[in-house]
Image (cartoon, rainbow, N blue to C red; front, side, top):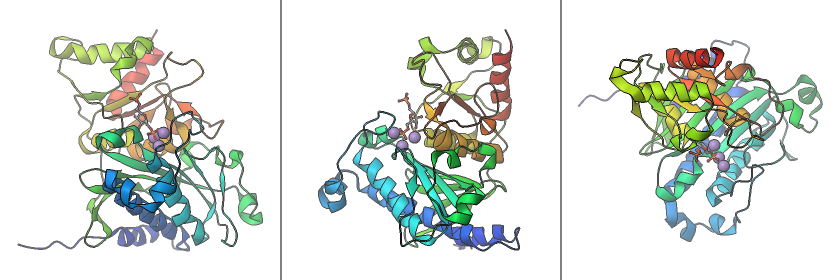
Amino acid sequence: MTTRRRFTLTQYLIEQRRRFPGASGDFNALLLDVALACKAIARSVAQGELGNVLSHVDQEVATAVNVQGEEQKRLDVISNAYFTEMTEWGGHLAGMASEEMDQPYQIPAPHQRGKYLLVFDPLDGSSNLDVNVTVGSIFSILRAPQDAIDSGRDVVEADFLQPGTQQLAAGYALYGPTTMLVLTVGNGVAGFTLDPNLGQFMLTHPDIQVPQETQEFAINASNSRFWEAPIKRYVDECLAGRTGPRGKDFNMRWIASMVAEAHRILMRGGVFMYPKDTKDPAKAGRLRLLYEANPVGMLIEQAGGRASTGREPVLQALPTTLHQRIGLVFGSKSEVERIERYHREP
Ligand code: AHG
Ligand code: MN
Ligand code: MN
Ligand code: MN
């Protein structure tokens, strides 16, 4: 048997940094802290029900309702704490925001404040925890406004309201049969698999590309009566199969962990839709712009796919609030463009 020499995440980041000769290394250090948080979350997730018995942390954490009115699972809260605790000390962050925190998180003294903002969904798909189905963490890194960097002042909501095009890095960790980290620092997408013996993320999927040809779509069909006409049309045409206007049969998948659907699409193509619908007129969609749609959108676009609100590129949407929701369609470029075209046609 021949052994293959593989890059670690650290080596990958050092290679990427060579593109910016003046870079301090802060950015890489921050990403490695995020990766450590993800490894800790992977460990907690893997404990499952055993964790509830054995971990004192679990017993101390009370569940509550988060700002979006969802019941927080213990692991939502624990994962959030891993993110804050493992990244706040390094001096790289001006502040953070998360699905599980109503307000921006301030870097506490005595830690130094830095130039980046970290935005995250600590556990995506957490309704799947009880049934032992893949979940993940999603994160995005932005640059803090210059006055916040210069003064070290507290961060405010407005500091985070940057369009997805401004993201410096985005990624997710996937807690499935293997733990993976999928990352973009703006130069393509790379996938790493956690080697549990080494405790290291190893580069296993360099340069991930969304396959362009697809016959697979993902949507929660129980919402079909609330869909707008362009989405109804797209799905109907897929369902019509070989004898319909698309001239081929389509397969359907719905995991209810967006991060796992994003991973499937990065690996084998397809299209994911959680569009704006008429279910709750107060909401513009289901998924959250800053810590779900934008990071996944950046990854998909960096992998040659397309991410959209259904009407325009999601990365161009101007956020108005920290926890705002948005319609999201992403995947193989030609399919997403078709859905956008259906939205333009009368
Ligand atoms: P979260 O667990 O972080 O709150 O996000 C859940 C999201 C997303 O992962 C998934 O695609 C979607 O909710 C599932 O929604 P449905 O229950 O409507 O299928
Ligand atoms: Mn949630
Ligand atoms: Mn989520
Ligand atoms: Mn979540």
